[in-house]
Length: 564
Image (cartoon, rainbow, N blue to C red; front, side, top):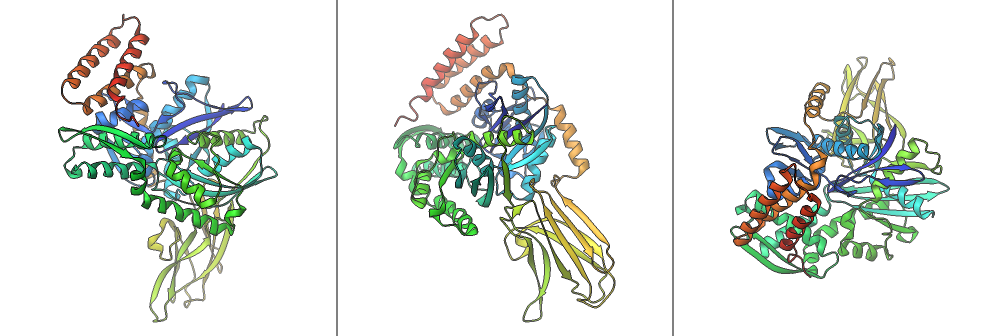
């Protein structure tokens, strides 16, 4: 039985395992360690995950969905065929695909998983992540914060001690954490971030720039056109990491749109996003009472940190070049695999002790009297953000009404003074004797563990009567609804792996077809028909050669797009 590490990302997901004194990232059926976090529905009603689904986002936008990690913890759904799915259900399909890749490689059962999540995920988002694993039939041994996993991987590789700032900018989320490594101890000092800021936002800026400079009306675009332009912008963003300018060409509203975009113009448009990156950095440093000079290294994590404007921002703010010696797309998964090995007590890995922090303040809503004698509800913190976990804290609260018989405790997570501006986690009620206001009290204790589970105990100090609740591993779904959805997902099959190489080529060709006009369209249509006939012929020979030829043929249509 294995304990494995999984990085469930907005853009890509990975699975890894620590064995034989090294980390092995598992390759999917296409030979890549990166599986796009995209889910689509095949013509046969099967679920497609990965590169083929990514190609379908442009070619068949009504049957494919991406970037759903951003909905984690919400009730948002999307329709694929006749079914509607929540973010955790779509994530469960990605997890099933990753687990399938692992079992194909190692042919052994999986005991538990360590799964990464953004450090700044709130309580509902963390619960949704755990539920995604449960819907995939998996047991989560631990949630590990992405920056913590990254430093674990860097720290073991570099074998150095010091204070690290982890700058983690992925496809959909941004985290910054400060960690201290010494004597085999990894201590998280503080964390902050923005769970709705990532590489997708830079792509959206570029998409809007393309629309504006080419006189295109966003409201007049069809869904497929909008997704194709977004895909072109995303490819351009990647190209601009190594080039000063790119040529672009795509079809929209019945015409071919062509032009040249300079990196400088793109970076100017992203000034607002760069400013948003600074606030979490400043908060984290302020919370640790450290100065910039106290930091020994800056570690970049996440594919979006490849953008020169991001690296330049970090170097300018901290006056030092960041570490980039581990692939930023892979480092979180490697750290999750190491954490899994630590939990499995792998003898080949050195003893490491990890401490983490609570990313948000936890407290309850209380009533206080203002100077004008009116009452207002405010947040009373019990565990403040960046407190080292596991942690337990308690406080005493008095009755506010004469002869009240019960005290209701509403639990919130967040930094705002007004409870309504924070995230509601749950509530519980304890009975108290009837007495004048202020003569009865309850003791409220919060205990928060390393997986983000919060135990709340409320005890009447007069009667000793106690109420307890654990707010953990349950999202907005009831147990009955969860069981129902689990059974429904079990019946939905993932598309067979053996046809993946052919499927991805066909969908890539169909996506390119949507971007062409005139004779090129007919030329590609004929080629798609010919290749489809070949792969459907069970007696055909030389399939590998045919795939290579068809892939090179498709390359010719895309080659001109991003010449610098």
